[in-house]
Length: 98
Image 1 (cartoon, helix red, strand yellow):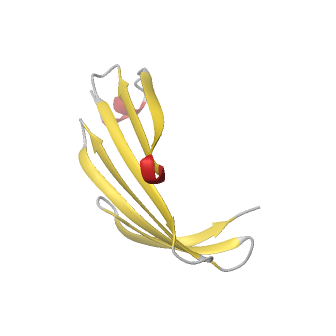
Image 2 (cartoon, rainbow, N blue to C red):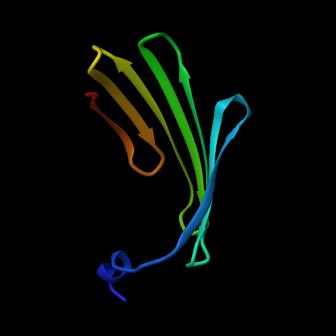
């Protein structure tokens, strides 16, 4: 089986999304490949313009990964954002809202 076959494969997925105490979002799902994934995510507003969020995820195929995001609102429509992810390292950019 080649790499292209992996992307063209169809599988079924079922799961739940549940809000835990302290506004921690949690998601759990499993698929027909006998895999499962659990995710926890939390957002914090540090100041009226600065916010931070973090997530941790465990996948039975990929194991642990996580990330931290920092966002600063410049105007009503634009924000600067920076992110660190355990698999992809550092990144940054703009968010545009309309």
